Length: 327
Ligand SMILES: Cc1cc2nc3c(=O)[nH]c(=O)nc-3n(C[C@H](O)[C@H](O)[C@H](O)COP(=O)(O)OP(=O)(O)OC[C@H]3O[C@@H](n4cnc5c(N)ncnc54)[C@H](O)[C@@H]3O)c2cc1C
Ligand code: SF4
Image 1 (cartoon, rainbow, N blue to C red):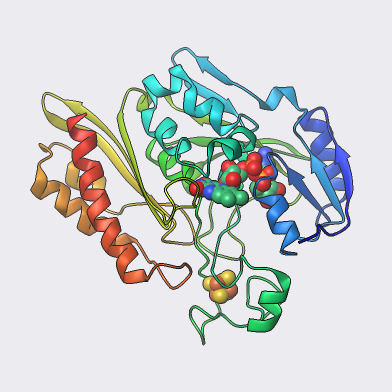
Image 2: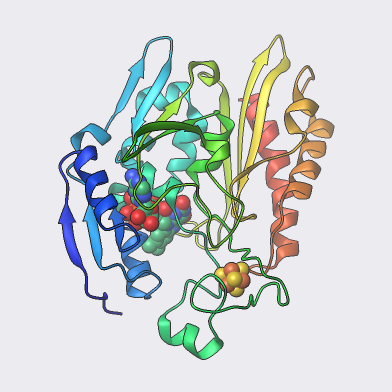
């Protein structure tokens, strides 16, 4: 599949990048690692007039500890760097574990944390070549007006399928976004809309520049579990992150989050209340598994059935909660 024609622009600073985004808003796409953008352009899902290569922006790279305030990660930091960071492995293990499951080692060398957070939602009927989509009929997410997954509805249910956002949700991460009128900071839990076709709250003239991990969630035990067809490379078809703090054998704080089963990564409703103050045993872990299965809304957006994915959410969540409590 060939790439559509586009003009390549580069920026050396975040400010210069935002100026270019503002100048060509709606006609331009940011290229970070390019591991999702380029295949999507080959499938003619995006046909921007301009592509803005931001990879030379040094201020958006690296992992920096801010004593007493947590850790800052530049949006262009690669997932390999995050996976192998001793600081993050020690203080925020759920993130390094999730980063280490993305795609394959070669793709992680290119992929950035910013690209993983901004990743487009996925659907069996959407992530296909133009010829395939033309033959089967376009849909709401691109060029059409119906949904093959939920016919009769007007909403797109394409699933958000990034691995690191559920881990970041468990850590109460925040994002820094730069736009023409300056910097804004937004909790990750407010970044996604829950709509498959318009999935993130980022204006076309804005750039995600940094991710903040708060000091308050440092040193939590962390576990990430992922369902995928090929263990060596695939996107998640269900993913569960758990971050948990223990005190005197009891759970002092915890969060559980899901990916790939809703149009946004989501925190499991009721999980924190159920866990805090209690000793985590198999019965409690099973209860959290049931809450996770209730929060998950898998539909026929992938090769595996919704029933199987929901059941795996239940099973993997139970195992992940027990593993986090015992680690
Ligand atoms: C075979 C294969 C398997 C994969 N498996 C997985 C998987 O298991 N798990 C997973 O999570 N992903 C997977 N991916 C998708 C992708 O590799 C990762 O999500 C990766 O982290 C994307 O990062 P990137 O830097 O390459 O993003 P890009 O492709 O450069 O960008 C992705 C999107 O984010 C936007 N963007 C990027 N950075 C910014 C920024 N700083 N500000 C604003 N917008 C931005 C881009 O414009 C684009 O829309 C897979 C991809 C392939 C090809
Ligand atoms: S959920 Fe429906 S509208 Fe969204 S990509 Fe899939 S088929 Fe298209």
